[in-house]
Image 1 (spheres, rainbow, N blue to C red):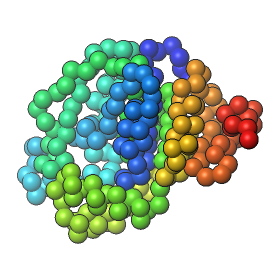
Image 2 (image 1 turned 60 degrees about the vertical axis):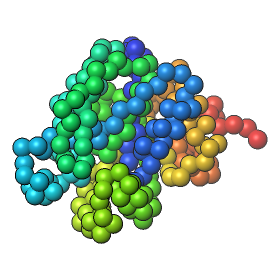
Image 3 (image 1 turned 90 degrees about the vertical axis):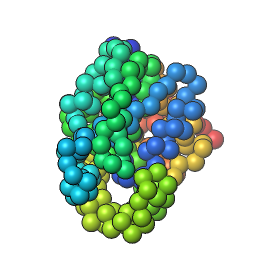
Image 4 (image 1 turned 180 degrees about the horizontal axis):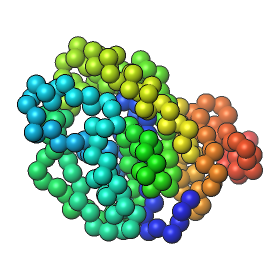
Length: 237
């Protein structure tokens, strides 16, 4: 892990409905120190130049829907501990809100998103990379509940989009990112497992091999090829 920078960036990546926001919230609450949140959702490209009909035809489950130049700019500002400006996005209208938030990075930043590990130039900016795995049916159920409550969509439109675009794009662009993860969390983790994840994230120097896999099953900690790290992290019984 690169410790030369004043801000520690943690990426939380997984498919739609995998629990990224929940895990980021949970880690922030339990951190015990100054920790802030960012979401890739706020960096969708502004579609205000398109008619409402054309906006609905855009594939928002493809990485090109994101303003990656702005993502990199904000992350580099965070790495340097500089004041930055955050966009905010409206999913109901598929447009970026005019107001940008002036934001000073905290020592720890948890950022969640579908494709944070896809682009090398973005991936390299994170100190720790977490990937969430979650069964497809559970992800669909969570997405339906979220989009009805937060985005004003009908259950039929949500399910139709999920099977037509979300699942194919997940298989093509989201799932392959597991190869670049430091930690793999299988949903849903228990409170004990969250505490052990926090223990690892709080470590002064995260293992440099980027080969640690965290599974919410027994055994909790698995490592390849270094078994020494696992011995240090796994509590004795």
